Image 1 (cartoon, rainbow over the protein chains, first blue to last red):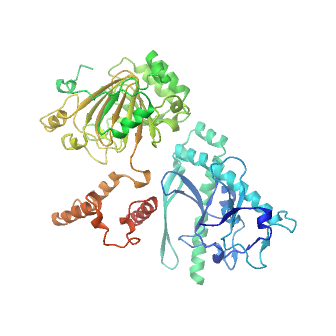
Image 2 (image 1 turned 90 degrees about the vertical axis):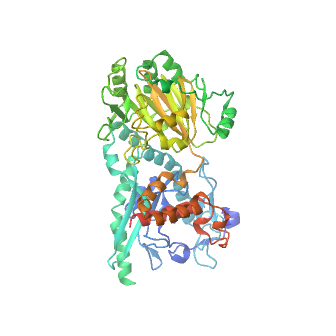
Image 3 (image 1 turned 180 degrees about the vertical axis):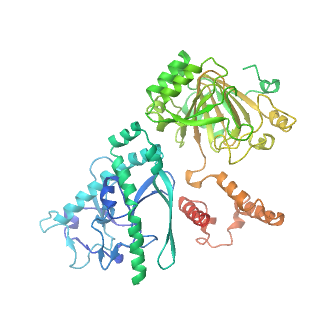
Length: 239
Length: 343
């Protein structure tokens, strides 16, 4: 069982968090979950793909970092090579407490088994010596709130995408400079032809709900696939 | 509709009727049911049923009041087909699919009322939640914890060839009249099924014209009729059709509305058996007979007659997809198939 605890100044006053970006700190991952509320920021750096959950009844959105498990093409030399990191990455080792369905503000929890928890004197403090949140923690608290809000909006967003059949299966075949082939399979993207065929009433409904922007941001994000391929080719050439 | 009804079809025995006191009793009966049954007046108190009893126009107004403002997919038959939505002589469909707003579609239905030769208009399998707002809330049967697909079927006089569906089905005649002619699962051999891929609505259908059966061309249909049952439903009546039972469905008034609920015993992530069958047609059907015999035996061993002998000799933890199926294992098989099929 992971040790998740509700964050408190009393229990966690001296906690320090390692901020560097490294496979050993849990950053070697090919994707992370993202929410429509941050698609605008995410699409400037990463492809956004959609995926059904294991039980095939719910979609989620993923910001893609690589082509296979464990591959994060944005990770190099202890840093993350992008101007924006998705919320789900940036809040670690903190998480949203409680159940996703709960209304109201959530507590911030911390994963005490995370390799980001500093054991020595390195890292950034989350509380000052008076027990007040540091600017670092204040930033995380805000991000946790944004992510929680984003998750709660996402259900209705995906329901609308399914209602108007705006998701379609997507397979990507990539042949790299070294001749090897990679494949992304089992994902969905926005069905652009169906989107283009929508009538004014439906478009107005999507606009009023705030869904049109993330839909088009997700489409725009597919332009980042070529960037992802280029990163992979560069990595192949150097190593 | 006495005009074209052959004697042997009108003489079919009726589907047995049951009475249910409440949702708990209906739930219990559905759990136990292995054959069709009819419940008279199950939804007599629905606002939609009440509106339809006033007039077709009142029912249409009620539906329009709850519609979402989006195009509906509608099938329009050829004039003079008697409402039969089927193949033409060249095995193309004798109806066209188009998209239109519900008010325009209903205006056309109202215009055609009382004209037997008018083209049939049919809105088939319309999702109650995605195309209407609040319609399900005000007009639904309490089916407990079942994960339902709730659909509405709206149209003029129509006749849908006998076919079967994978889920269980509770179908409610909400407006007009509906006649279901039902056959047990194994009768598929006697129903002369048409193509599996080129179908009117996704499922293979019987090529037999129930209003004019040609027993020279389809002699075994007489055997099917020997086990057929009929459910004549008025507004508010319901029929339960067990999964995979064959059903021929007629709307017999100028305006008919059906509401139905589909649910599966198996979770969604287990996928569709029809896909396995189609895949086997591609990979196995045209093999030499001796190899087909081997694959039949393998299917029996792993799928149909599977028992402990399949896995008992393999250490636990090393059985892979031979272990009881889970969403995780299903995901692995799906990923494997996706990769191999797209090679």
